[in-house]
Length: 140
Image 1 (tube, helix red, strand yellow):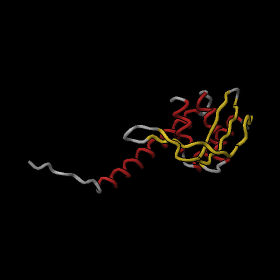
Image 2 (cartoon, helix red, strand yellow):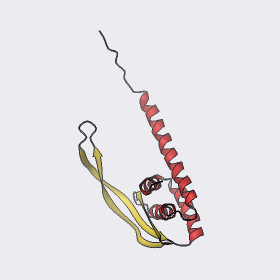
Image 3 (cartoon, rainbow, N blue to C red):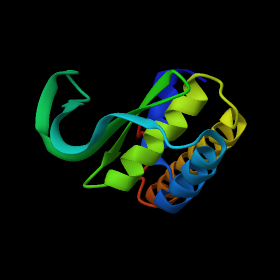
Image 4 (cartoon, rainbow, N blue to C red):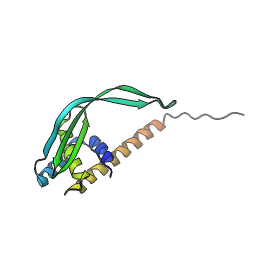
């Protein structure tokens, strides 16, 4: 799994499960060295208009970011909102997963479960929207 994909999935992982995995990893590796403590800030949210494909700034989003180092491997995490514990947990999981440290399989399982949940949520949303589709017949 690529670093970017892992970061995206850790950002979307369920909070309680993410914290549990990070706690188990800290139990295996000890406390991480904190490079950047959890910091709340704003990032710009850009979207692309679907017809002309023009990008525009929709607004700012509150996020929390943290960076840690475990056994010489750095990892960072970012979570939506004021989620200091979650961003720190995501950084711990990223450091272990990105550098193949002991326990990286658990991080991979968490990421896969998150990806599966996202797909299931998307399918459920599309199923709900499908009921509103209007189909037109062509008249000759």
